[in-house]
Image 1: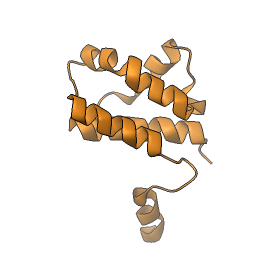
Image 2: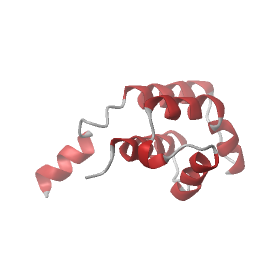
Image 3: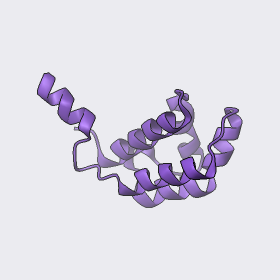
Amino acid sequence: MVSSGRRRFQHLFEELCVALGRVLPRYALWLSFKELGADPENLSREEALEYCDTHLAEFLQLHEVGLGPRALRRLRREVERFDPLRPTPYEVMERLSG
């Protein structure tokens, strides 16, 4: 079973890609967390939110993309509301069809 911290990281990554309308390198985001001393395998809600508030802009600039203030607020809200113990709609549909 995947850890709740890893699910939280994956959710942040997916929401970020949706907000940008393109796929970013997942491993680069993973390394960004590692460089800050956070473990993406055990990512807490607070660490994910702190990243959005203080480090995300630098990561996006490195990849030559950006988010407007409204999109950033939406991303942060989605990260804050995410409950890794509940399946996402995608996971439910995958289970039903699989």
